Amino acid sequence: MQKYLLGIDNGGTLIKVVIYDVHGNEIALAKSKTESIISEPGFSERDMDRLWQANRGAIKEVLETSHIHPASICAIAVTGQGNGLYLVDNKGNPCRYGITSADTRAQSYVDRWNEDGTTESVMHMTCQAVWAGQPVAILAWLQEHEREVLKKTRWIFMCKDYIRYCLSGEAWGEITDYSGTNLVNMHTLAYDDQILSNFGLNEVRDKLPPLKNSTDYCGAISPFAAQETGLKEGTPVYGGLFDIDASAMGLGMIQTDMLAIIAGTWSINEYISRSPVWARSLKCTAYCMDGYYLITESSPTSASNLEWVVNNLNLDLPKGVSPYAYCDQVVNQLAPEASNVVFLPFLYGSNVGAQSSSAFLGLSGWHTVDHLLRAVFEGIVFSHRMHIEQLKHEVKSFSVARLAGGTSRSRVWVQMFADILHMPLEIMENKEVGALGAAMAAGVGAQLFASFPEAATKMVRVKEKFYPRPEFSAVYDKKYERYCQAIDALKSFWNVC
Image 1 (tube, rainbow, N blue to C red):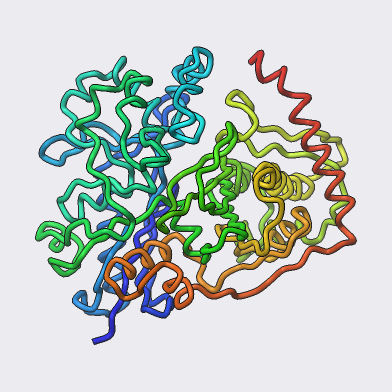
Image 2 (image 1 turned 135 degrees about the vertical axis):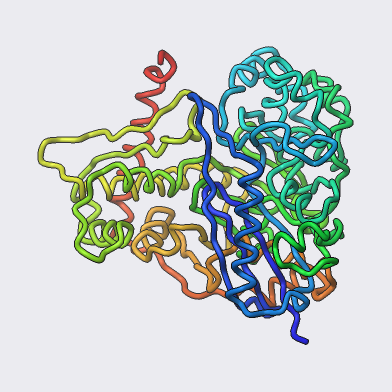
């Protein structure tokens, strides 16, 4: 009987469930939209019951459309958006809505920790700065505002660990995810009582689940989950990965001189290192390969900004043309030098300051919506470039760069990335790199592959390579300089606001 792997990817806006064969071929894909609940400014939550129902529905759909017998699926793993907070009680029921990593209600705690030295006191252990969407900040907020919720909490989960718990009934954390929470010592890869004490979070220690690795066995499909999803009871479920790890592995990142760029809901830019690397602007987390660390620069400044623009601008769409295909056409028809409008892609947060906000700058009466769309494409790439230039302080050059995420479906946009970053870019045959990375973890866990490098060799394939066009180098460099100048000019305005 042929063997298949199931990868489940819980992203910021979509749940994607994919069945793969052991050669990395996508057999079937099902998607389900997940909605954020924004009850007041700064709050970003999810109904955890509805989140599970959306996963359950997508799993049932992919089984039905694939016509594959559930017994042929030999291993399962989950990836998902990291950070945020998903709390369950001792019966496994949600204690409240899940809180996503886009939530900023706890920013005042981060500000205080930055001012009073708390952040500095833990950074040599955690190798990362603190930000509002991390569990440490959210837990501090809950201790003050929802203490009863914490009292009834049995387990503090990340998103994908909650979904795995729903599948297996077993409570585990997974190290790549929890290493990004500021709860783990990056040198010991374990929870650290000193870190918890510095943040004033000693009372939550027994609510943190035991930690497993990405490829460790974490239980099997329970009778309940089998009935809910159609999966075979007893199918093994493995640890899974933080979404930034899953995407990197789905791109085949197994060497230290490779750059991975994921341009989706978030701008994620990363490489792997044999030793921890830390600086205030970088995030260092455990990678899914033993002995490696994932060094990341990221912010919510990528393609989700275009989605907002498409949904809120009155685009004059030709009949039968999708809004994203229309944007491609418009941007492709305008030369880079056609206008100097600058777009700051900070609708959902930024990489330049907690108070910064989005803007179009340089608008004149002769500009049209077409100019705005090109500015949006460019501004998103400029934000990626800013992140990558920070990474290059540690790694001076990369032998190869690979791009994934929604932008990789746009040839116009991929070419723009190559032009603005001044480097060749590879795009992959498989578009769902997060789900692929999860499936690879399942395959290594089930011993279908001896290691992640072997899984990458067999399951990851490059589709096409884009090269930078020298004739656009100067104009894009000048535009990037203008983008940076606009940010510098607005910092005093944002700080007053």
